[in-house]
Image 1 (cartoon, one colour):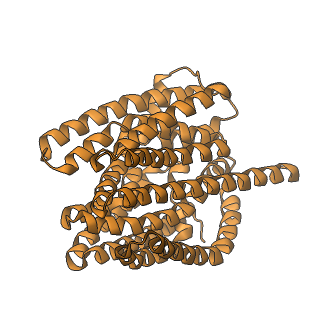
Image 2 (image 1 turned 60 degrees about the vertical axis):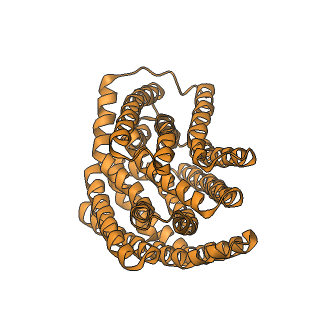
Image 3 (image 1 turned 90 degrees about the vertical axis):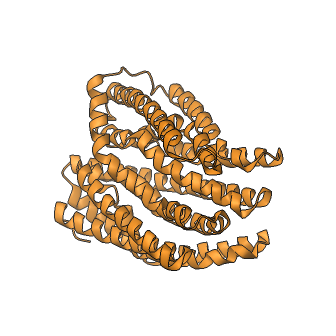
Length: 424
């Protein structure tokens, strides 16, 4: 590779990170706004119900997409020079995603009908969010299609629009004084509108219209089945505290305060996820070109230098921002969430680089190993949440979540060293 090509690649990489961080700002702002809107129009118990439903939506959505989006992200960078094959891969993945998501939604409806008390408010919340699952699945596939094509500007814009649309829907419902139980309809509205806009964009750039090939569908499903446990437990790992609190505490107001603080922790976590998304295609290409060690070493050196000062600074900024928001909202009861935020963010700072490398195994065609690491992490997180919540309530949930980040980081580091011989 010539110096000019290297500079061009570096410029595209940095540009992708810039646009993804812009998307992160919008996503975080939208998530912040939608929670503040719920606080403004409704009480803490409604916020608790909404975030409990959202936690389940995140978990169920991974079943609905079945890991096909990760197969797309793995395949497209390898074939993006062949436009026809890219289109065929995308078309096949979309059809496979449609089939699985519809089946998953039907199955979830059956489970709810036969296994949950239909007189509870939470039952209605969950039923409403199921309508958005098929739209979510196709959107995840299309987003990773754009990511694999290195169209990071479009990826960043569409990724942020989802949260903007959810916030807009909640604002409208709040102004119309609709009952809090209907707030979860915002997910379906946002996913359907986002899907329409992305399809129009892809049609305009002529990256739709490929032929469906059953061998591609089966390949996507096979890869997705291998990576599904990894994706499932990663999503569950970020929501297991809310889910466990819902079962054990059963106080929606307390959960609402905790979930508001965790919102800021998740925003902090997304900083690392943005970098992960940017390096995933580079890892795949480096491995295909037999330059994994060289690229990884150079990349890790830059990340280590960056995170040394940036991570602690951003953690302090997030905590300070949370304090100011609680002051502005005039909700003193939410100050109690600051201690949860500090504990979880500190664990993320310690394990930042490991979080960034969270998809390295699936990107290098070892999805089962990635699944194994994530399964261990989520089960330990779940077990610790059960024990610690029984002992310390919401503080126990925060401690358990922080420890799970440390366990995950250690497993990633050991796995990279053992599987690829890379030390960092």
